[in-house]
Figure 1 (cartoon, rainbow, N blue to C red):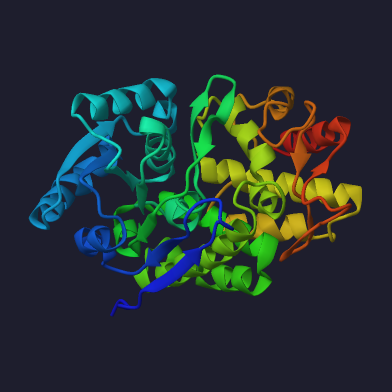
Figure 2 (figure 1 turned 90 degrees about the horizontal axis):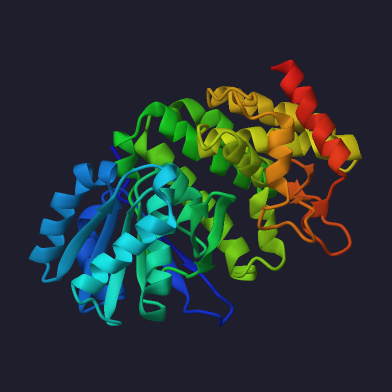
Length: 375
């Protein structure tokens, strides 16, 4: 029988913004009306979602919120990373303006990471900022994207290059909704959980590997435990460094090369698969440089196998094409990309006070070429 346990994790901003809570519990979506009244009372609510999630949950949630006395309107945009654009940001913003939303309003972001990013950016910029409540419906959003206040849109030059830090006022994660996800989508989200274990918590990573069959099958109690632990880990990092000026950089493990793979494939490869490839490649970089314990890349490859994710460069994502996007990465300095490297499983390499390191471009190209030849 699914657990009724609810975990409440506080995310601190160090005074930059208000602290907020991340609630994780099976069945929480049905309690959203009461949670809004308690944590984020507002004159009006703008429920922003995408076309896929909207079909599953929008009508029921609208009815529930209105029955609870809330004034709420639905705003949707087409599903998919390709639609996380400035054009759709403008359409959503104009829709709220047309309906007369004021500064006493609140945005509810209902969906996966794309919805959370785009709706969060709408909230960050609407009348110079209104509250946002993140209600993640995918594993990747529950485990990672909904926490920390990163919002934004993709542009032709790369992913998330236009955006703002805008912390949510509340995050409500209901693992039961992941039962509607295809198995492959659960695997994609679990890549971020693997990342959390790889950079901070070896026992958690070992537990994830042990629980992987249940997690992929959508066992709600296994999912709840994994989401709750990942939330605790990410909240600890974000609370220490809200604006990504130091330790928070460790959350980018696998993402420098992962984002390059995504962009080079014209986002034809899913985010989770790209990050899995990125983690493997960045572990291999660390091994080649002598800062990462030998065997770490192979360990990550084995775990990717339990997730049923193939570690290969997607068709069209040639090494030189991937390299061309690295200088545009948000973490790049003076046009040089920086990489989070592991010391060993559960610990990031930390040198000269830095959590990410510049790596010689020829070595990065060599590692990419080796993977391309292997594929």
